Length: 95
Image (cartoon, rainbow, N blue to C red; front, side, top):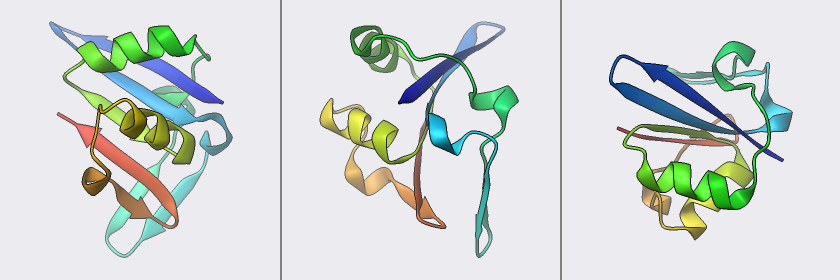
């Protein structure tokens, strides 16, 4: 299950997609750290069509987890080459 959270600040927004089973976990590898906090990522599941619209129209995305990354690659939101792996967990950002 993919959770989607929208953070709005000032005139911008960040759309966060995250695999539900990663919420509350922390991953470290070398100098990289990925802290999947509830406050930043936890939200609710939304229909895939709405998720696609949000990700296609946003300029700022944070994407974490195998299912979330696969969804955004499938729909040409990100490219496979832009994904980093931290302790086995794929993550990408679009800014």
